[in-house]
Length: 210
Image 1 (cartoon, one colour):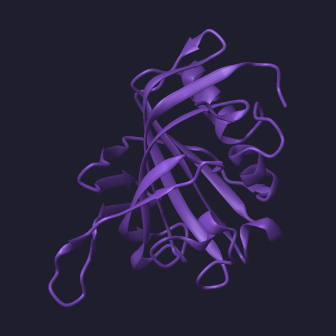
Image 2 (spheres, helix red, strand yellow):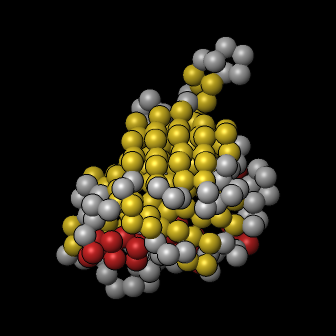
């Protein structure tokens, strides 16, 4: 772990190629044998040492040839172009798990992704409403992901699924939904009906902050 303390608190939208529910959240193997996905967050309040991160949008995406715990993956961090140089450096180091304790989400993701792609600084479009279970993420040159409620295949009615994970590494509670993902960079992340999650998160070096 690095020596710089940090905190980020905000609304997270995540999507992956797995079936609705994402087996990873239940210590099970991925639906299709391999993993790929992306997430984004609007930081309502955050800091990295003495650098404020309030109001920034950032995220990361990755892909693994098998289950995440088998490694050999690659990871890409993206940051909205509104961040200054110091803020960009801070979010890249956070995204690369350099200041996270062993066994936390970001440390594990990075330990399992030996290939780090060059970070992307771009005009990110991001909207997320966990209550309505809708989201929109656009990272130019990387991917586009839309989130919506799971719907009854016969009537089209919205179905609500909320999952509580008291021991979760990413969130303690999240609304689950459906995602439509398109990506030119991660070929496996072209999924018309994958998993989606919408959550309020608060992270630091030790993982989730209660």
